[in-house]
Image 1 (cartoon, one colour):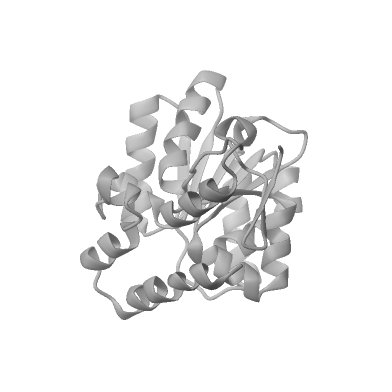
Image 2 (cartoon, rainbow, N blue to C red):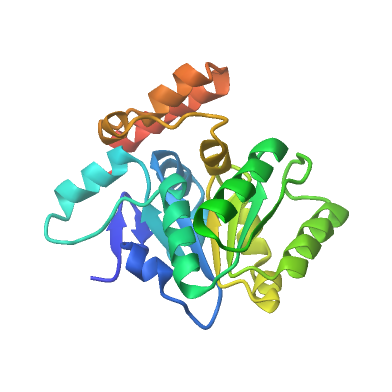
Length: 237
């Protein structure tokens, strides 16, 4: 089976092997957690974006629910905060270049240093000033110019949920022209790599409580609202 339709969302990025296969055109990877599934059920354009690209199961709750439904299908839980290390390992073996776009300035810079030193690969990054999406033309031009100058194979974008996927999708022609082969939305992954924010222990991740753990680290109202809203996944048929 090459795809799974779960909670009205089409998942094509079922394994890391599928994701890391190099295509002739840009491969856009969307790590889909419970929040994304809820957004996709409310927003047909976002649902279409996932379906036309390579959606993965990110988040333990969607993964467990899907495993119960598709018992005879092999697929992996693939989150941006874990997949970044697979990408770097693949890049080391295949001489690929990685570009980190977004995240906080200090986290982006530190992540570039950590990954380049750990994997001995070419890594660069850029953390533009915050701006609501869609960006102003000059803001976009500065981002594209940084990517064009480095010419990465992998582009990892940490602009946050939906915003990063929309940006990638809206600029896919330019990215393809530059020669980018993979583009992945990775949310707050650079903060995890840099150690600015500690990721939940594996046991907490497997229990599906990573969002709760993050809330305790960053007790902010918007995180509490996102956590509560994500519970709506159980109501989607």
